[in-house]
Amino acid sequence: MPRYTAPVRDMQFVLHDVLKVGEAGIPGYDDLDPATTRAILSEAGKLAQDVLAPLNRVGDAQGCVLRDGTVRTPDGFGAAFEQLRDGGWTALDCDPAYGGQGLPCLLATAVAEILSAANMALNMYQGLTHGACNAIQAHGSAAQKAMYLPPMIRCEWGGTMNLTEPHCGTDLGLIRTRAEPRDDGSYAITGTKIWISAGEHDLCDNIIHLVLARLPQAPEGVKGISLFLVPKILVNDDGTLGARNALACTGLESKMGIHGNATCVMAYEGATGWLVGAPHQGMRAMFTMMNEARLGVGLQGYAQGEVAYQNARDFARDRLQGRAATGSATPDRPADPIIVHPDVRRGLMDQKALTEGARAFVFWGASLIDRARRCDDAQAEALISLLTPVIKGFLTDKGFETCVLAQQTPGGAGFTRDLGLEQFVRDARITMVYEGTNGIQSVDLVGRKLAADGGKPLMAFFDLVKDFIAQASGDAAFDAQFLSPLKAASGDLQTAAMFFLNKGMTSPNDALAGSYDFMHLFGHVCVGLMWSRMALAAHQGMEAGENADFLTAKLDTGRYYMARHLPATKLHLARIESGAAPVMALDEAAF
Image 1 (cartoon, helix red, strand yellow):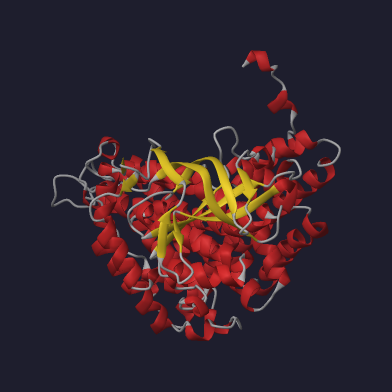
Image 2 (cartoon, rainbow, N blue to C red; image 1 turned 180 degrees about the vertical axis):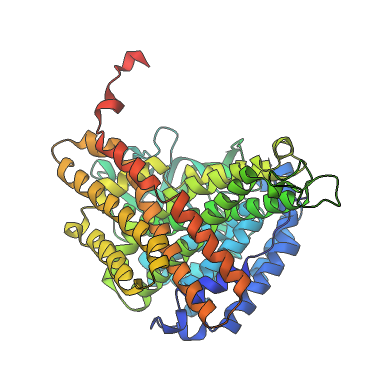
């Protein structure tokens, strides 16, 4: 059976040595001393290892079952979810005014990685609820917040978002779900939504659906979409549960992975709902939830890579096959462990470098969210908005790639279900698709985010890289191994950005044909920046006499990324500069 151990030591390194949370000047970060974060992450790790991870294969094998209008989750999910709820793990960074603990997003993000790596499908139930809470908190009325947030934050009630319909996915301007006003101020919601994660299940007493719908005489397209709060069970004025609402799960999707999470077809047949926010402002309200979800999905991608890597590494240490090319590494045994072979080592180094770099990137992103929210920092808000499609798109692509590399490590055994690695591949695959496909992320990045506010967020990112290089420079070896590659990669990113800014208006196909490569180029620069920051922290730690083995491994892994992965920026730049001609050359009939 696959195993999982929370990488608490590495998380502590990112929090305290790289991000230096105690010196960040963000309200609430003073409470994140090493002892506190270690205690919280270790407890989350125990829950993940002992309770959640053993259920991951159970959920995959059993899946969810729709029976008599109710979705039954796999054996053990209910008890495990109760432990999540009772332990307060679902409310870490939620508003204390409604029962949350008020901890920073950064710490909640670290815990979310642990829970997601252990059992992605189960953790999605509370993750979606968390996003719905944030949307209600940001856009709901005072009465809606008082009524719905406390039980949702406690995860006594679940939450979802309902966007996609059978005839439209990305183009939400085409949605047909209707909202007819009633005399009592509520609305009758009628329509069908598909691919609704956690749309129906038996883990909570109620489920609060956030549904996009169109009011009568609403403007065409996305400007005419409003957001509605539609409970599965109507709530009485005193907060008790009343009658069942006119909505139902009419089917479950048969999926490649995340079998333990219910992906539902939802039918609304005049269901009672209430407007959230202003009329025709539903997209703005929903994107509060979507943006958080995209960061969470980027985390899911590398979290699956982390657990897959752990199991591939353990197999490579144990499996005896052949002899090292330079001579027997273990002459007292019939063969050497396969970890001695360079090609196996290459695959493991790819996995380790990608997951550790991704972790630092996402934790940095979470710290930007905290700075934006807790310091009302507009620059941090603009920067995380720019980086969100990169985090979602690049890290889920690389997370899936990491899972495939891990599956490859054991050879044929990785293809069998016995070892369990193939589940991580299947589960990770959805992260590249939902909450906006990665192609859509790249279009959003190039089409909207680059030119936002006159390009100021992008220029702020370049200044950030430039300032880091200037401040960290001084050691010849460090400069050559980390800062020079980072400077070259940042130069490639600037050249690509200028290409898009010059082509965007006059030749949009040239820009869009290279958008996916730009997302990956940007991602490599971000992870290269993170590895450079980690390497600098490792150097400083070694000078202070800290854990030499851990820090040496960190430096070696960082050098690997800078030498073997970061040069991909030149490949992506060459593809971008080739323009749309190679992409659009074939006539449609030639495909």
